[in-house]
Figure 1: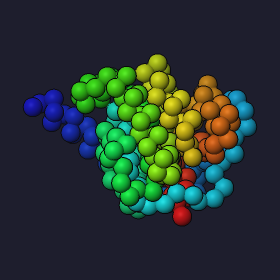
Figure 2 (figure 1 turned 120 degrees about the horizontal axis):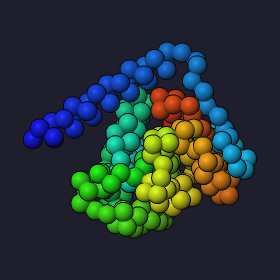
Figure 3 (figure 1 turned 90 degrees about the vertical axis):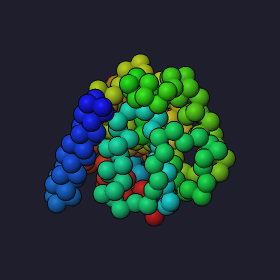
Amino acid sequence: MLIKNKSILLMIVITVILSMTLVACNSSDNGEVSDTGSSGGEVQGLTEAFAEQPVILTSIGQSADVEMIKALMDNAGLEYEMDKLVTGDGLGEEKTLILAVGGSSKGLGAAGINADDELARTKELIKAAQDKDIKIIVMHIGGENRRGELSDKFIGPSAGSADYIIVVEEGNKDGLFTNIASDNNIPMDVVTSIADAVGPLQKAFK
């Protein structure tokens, strides 16, 4: 019970801090958005809105990053539902699917699944979304700490199938997202911080 309460308290603290940062960011014009990655091929940022509501938000990798993206969605005023374990069969009338990509062994364990299970769900979900003509936005906001063997296992299948990618630059130091976006002709915006991601997220929607 003590561990559970600490986890809840930590999530509340993260949400409050992020919300305060978003307010500060929205009150100034200093947030930076780049349309190129740290290395690799040339990538164009998003030039026009393409996504529609309603939206479904899910985790790919079961990290806590999905909760921070939830806060961004709230700040952007978007209509959405969050289902961390949604499958293709769970897709309904949604017009846009947002994938919060970032692996967590702890999160996978809490969900009672392993990395292979999650990867299979990811591929099945993306195929179902494409069959339903649901637009896919991939967000990787965890930075360098959310890279590595586990997270990278989910990045390729997710980002390579996206209609748009938003990534915090610290998570793209090796140019992985840039290369994926360039190879697949996917618009991508690189932001300097988590809070800066709310701008690109808003401009994606009609």
